[in-house]
Length: 275
Ligand SMILES: NC(=O)c1ccc[n+]([C@@H]2O[C@H](COP(=O)([O-])OP(=O)(O)OC[C@H]3O[C@@H](n4cnc5c(N)ncnc54)[C@H](OP(=O)(O)O)[C@@H]3O)[C@@H](O)[C@H]2O)c1
Image: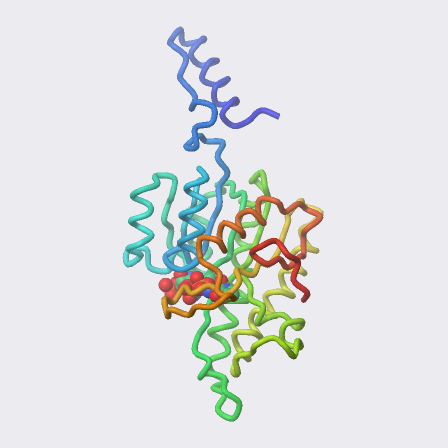
């Protein structure tokens, strides 16, 4: 099949020959700014793991659509976008259907190879301590962690089907895995009803999404980044994964995913995680 660059070159040559002008020059092979570079869209790219995803994908030469709820206040992301011209900063609130629809309209059918639903809401464990559970808070977790990724995937389905790689990922957590929660040895934080519950809902909905879209060639999976100190609280220990290592691992996992891996739950180091 003709690559987009080859197609462009042929079109340029055709136009140039019929117009009697010099042929236009396509981007050189291997140029990371080439139009053939794959495109990734990352949500919540203004800080934490999302910002590191944007940084590492841009360094790999990908076109990066880096989204944030408040682009004007996304200082670190804007600085990164100044450094890498292939980063385009876009606004979206994944919990707001109107905002997702507006982003979809702005993208105007642009092909997307990989959608990384990274945005998440950890909230405050104080919201859900047994005996004092604030049931009005559940919605905030569920809308961002569970419904947001589904909303994004549904809205961007045409863009993903137009892309080459057709991959949809969501950052989940072991807190949403039954295997982890039923493991007597695993350390637990009390009060994770809402965070863990919303990630468990995400996991199930993404398996359903994988089943629904497999025939269209979409690979859908959920990924755990490990425990990464993105809030700068200075937590240390052998269980803490450095952010660069976690994201490099996740990108390598995403690169290696095939359609047969649809509906899987992977750790940042590639290990399969039991649901
Ligand atoms: N760090 C860990 O150890 C760990 C472990 C397991 C899973 N995860 C998951 O990995 C993902 C990233 O984690 P992180 O540690 O980087 O989180 P983080 O530092 O808390 O950053 C969360 C990101 O999500 C964005 N976000 C929140 N609500 C949003 C909304 N409604 N629309 C769009 N963006 C929204 C935030 O934007 P604002 O700046 O506007 O709030 C921010 O960019 C999350 O899904 C998290 O649950 C993290």
